[in-house]
Length: 178
Image (tube, rainbow, N blue to C red):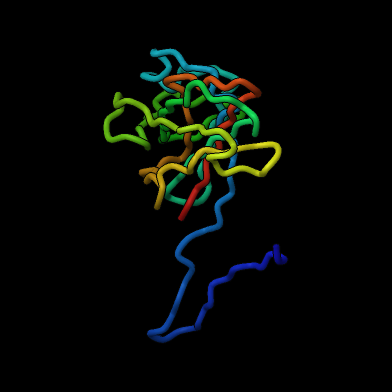
């Protein structure tokens, strides 16, 4: 493989030919440490009540859309893929991850708050993106442009149906787009 190169946008100053970058670089950030740990039905209806150490709230500092991916051990056997609910919050959590009273949550991955979650299909290394030795990754969801965060100041991912894999944990990562 050749040495990597940096991709940049060409910028022209002034005039009708002004160009600008259409998106920002995605940094994949872990937002759940193990999708094998299911949230309760009550937590799925009241995300502010979540106290799970597995859930890592993500504070939105830049961007308007997001995508999600799961990681499994390269040699893991998948029995069940996780079903997640992705929530946006009107307020940022404090340093302990608790949301202030009055925070409004909305679903990012579905139209209605109580809609069924989104399945993140896990696959064996041979049929998934992988590094050839340590990890395999799910397909990135949604496939193209990402879900609109609808102005969320923070994002949390809760597990409706737990993943079941033979080896290791199943961390979830979010990438924020323009």
